[in-house]
Length: 475
Image 1 (cartoon, rainbow, N blue to C red):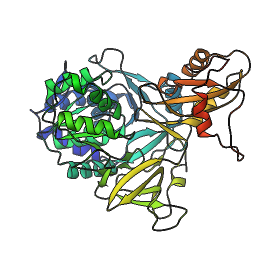
Image 2 (image 1 turned 90 degrees about the vertical axis):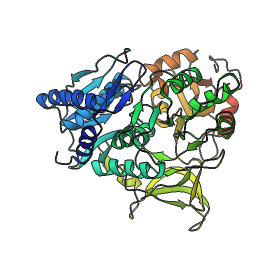
Image 3 (image 1 turned 45 degrees about the vertical axis):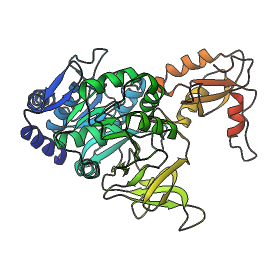
Image 4 (image 1 turned 120 degrees about the vertical axis):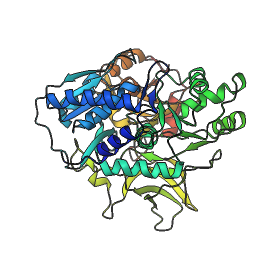
């Protein structure tokens, strides 16, 4: 491993901002000096064990930041894994990516993280020489794709974000997104550290009361979270005091409700920027002066977006293709898969649909088979493959729906032999995949409604969820 652009830049920041608060939770805070010392000690342990690829599978905490810096400073590559993945899923990723060890946590968010070696049966695939960080995406595959990022790509993403957001050392960032996720990684973790800002990392669900408690204590200038966080604040707007002092509120991954944006703006005077970014390319847009329903904003420096439509060049709406200076290099565990999604002139086919008007992007949906649930892009095909392995299931289709709270959820229509129940399907799924992939709404039917071309009919599938089915029904 010869590339150390990101590690060297972070080392310089640790020395420059020694006495400033770096990261914290309500019970544990660390200055940049303490972050420097703690990560250096862990780096020595990692280097002594000869580990070159280390997975971080833990919730957000100051100790997570220590571990990330330690892996980088040991000259190893961190693999940022969603902690919600099951042990089977994590094992498959470790085997396919050649991971040597894993840093994990338990229920105690403030306890030291545990480093454990991993035994593999297959040789590790080669990393590219300039890879410094690996992150994961569902991508176009049925299990997470491991995206290799060069240090320069990660720094380019941080630099572009810092430029448009005006991020500086006096900012206080309150981030409710997991640090493995692009929303946190590209807007809070790396840019915040490189700017010498203070990063606060709550644990637990972002309920309105939890968010309000942190806001009152930390007094952030930047608030980062998924749409569900802002939906909760909007629902409680009449029963809580207004938030003050927030100059930027960020939302991403799933589209933000216009009603939520309007309610928060009216109650708190906070306008939420619904920015656009994807795992493979980094952050792409930002609106410094957002308005409810105003779209995803203008392109970041170094970002190009074009609209591809069957109507030909000049179409206002179609699939989005993007090119940026922060793009990942490839999928380590799916050779050639990412390359097939990149055009001859270097544009990545996103699978997202939208339009560009006067330099501003407005998303309208997905053209592929991936669902956006709570900020996570989930492969419908992966879930269908699991359900279809149940011996009583003859057919199924997985699709997006909403629950009684009008929140996006995963739904499944299932054709089964015998008296299969909803609970049995869920237990079967939970034993084979992460909990967030298990369908919340399940309906049984005699046949999957399909078009003459064999494609599932969306309207008919939604109707199934409102009907009472004899074999367990929808819950």
